[in-house]
Image (cartoon, rainbow, N blue to C red; front, side, top):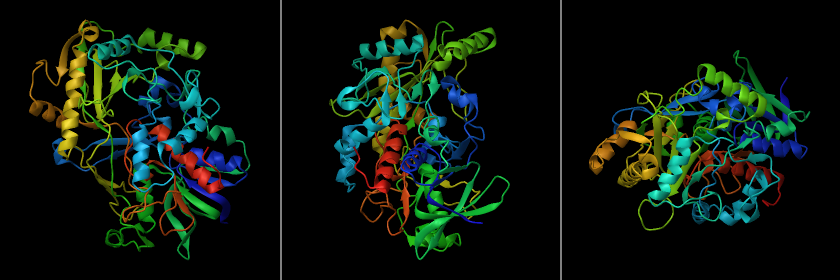
Length: 532
């Protein structure tokens, strides 16, 4: 038998869970498909242990093609593959971006997406522990809170940043983004608040909701050019079809969504034909415009063994675990990336162009070990990259990973921004509050006066993703746009997209909160109601 639902949502991540909750709460029947398993591991819900989930069956371990711009390396781009998607495996940082980001979306043809349009939606979604007023909400499903634990190195970084000329900020999502401070996080009472643990939880008991985990989409189904349903497989390989009465919503992320569109015959017809796929709709923008936030680490070795390294082993681990289980306090409530900063590195006093993520330990990446010993890592991130890449099919087999040509650090502007970010990070590392703790800079160099060329080489050697692949099914009205301002796929009736892929340009900061906002707006459009 083929089941029929009012709506089918493909992808139970930051956007998909939001759309699903809003539709079910409005009395609509929904089939929610998620390629990964349930979020039923304590490592997801305990903030400090999220890193143990990355690389498991609950993440997609995407990799870019080898890139000359990063010295022939491939870059790992992990994404969530479980209920809650990346909101179940990220560092829980709550950032919306800058006013100018959304005003620029509107200027690019995304009518109704200016900052004044989206601010009420951010506020509606938010339940902030501490902040209220014109920029924050207190009644939403998404809990946003201050961490109950902050590491001494995080405090030292914030003091050092101020000594280096960066002002203090107690709210990166208020009137101004710039400054240094502690991040607020999507946590509540010491636990992660993913969209599965918040939005989806609110409707889990409804008879209108059907959830299929470990369900892999093969393709969309069509009738007279309009989407009529989906074809998918369970983990045993059994195939199923499901039909819709109203619409289908793709929410598979910046890599999964363009792949699903292309497998279904929506994309550049010449590229589809090369894989033996008949084009249902020629949309050349599908998989184009790929953007991601990129960082390169600055490492400082501490004089004493005070970093997070080793603080969660042996007897200490037992004590931390007991403290967490009993009182939801202590080290395990940390999101690890507790502090950071937003800075205009050009010195012109304008919009921040670099974000700093700071970890109170030395961290590497999936293709390299971190430096040995104790220390902290300052990661300058290019907020508005000008490099552009693609996400295309490797083959017509749904099991094959998409081919990601990221083109990171291929523009001079991006390289210069990264070099300025590295200089700022090194200056903060040498400010008194950190200089009293940090014995030496491990990388890029102990030498304070290395050249810009040396910093560029360091960036190309260690550059890594901040896990925000986006913009591959962009919103707009131009020839390369994939969705219109109501998130409807151009020329494909009964199909919308509700994830990070619809961003025309990457926002200035972490992307979970904006993706939740996109999910909220998609639900508004589906239910024909006002955004506020």
